[in-house]
Every structure is written in structure tokens, then in C-alpha cells.
Amino acid sequence: MDWVEYDETSVKVLPQWARESGTTFDAAPYSVSIVPEGVVLRRGGRASALRWVDVLAPIRLDDALAPRLLLAWCREDPRK
Image (cartoon, rainbow, N blue to C red; front, top):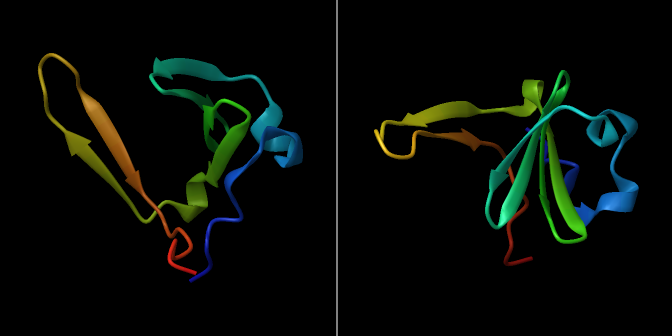
């Protein structure tokens, strides 16, 4: 299993698919864009791009006031 390649990187180095326009949601402090190839989280000048094939598990959280979906994926160990 590989780590997600574009995790908290500069927006400038995102692959072309992650720079395409898609449906964007405000999920402060993030901006979340859904594109055909995956999902992109942006915060300031940094971003994480995750292809749908890299999703380990979708986790739905039922909340009538704020329904949410968490996506689990393999991030690099932050202690490195």
C-alpha cells in the first residue's frame, strides 16, 4: 500500500486532474473540490489530492444538522 502522493503540498504541484474545476464545497477551514478522478482539499496555499482508487473506506456520519462523509486513506506517518 502506497502513501497518498499529494498530501499537504503546494497547490502549484498538484497534478492536472486535481486542478480541474469541479463541484466545490466550503468545509471551513478547507475548500473541498469533487472532480471525476478524485477529491481535493485546499487550505491556504496547501492541498491534498486523493484519487478515488486510493480511498480505503468511506465513513458516513449521520447528523441531521451537518451530515458528513469521512474518507480514510493512507497518509505518511507524521512522526517521520
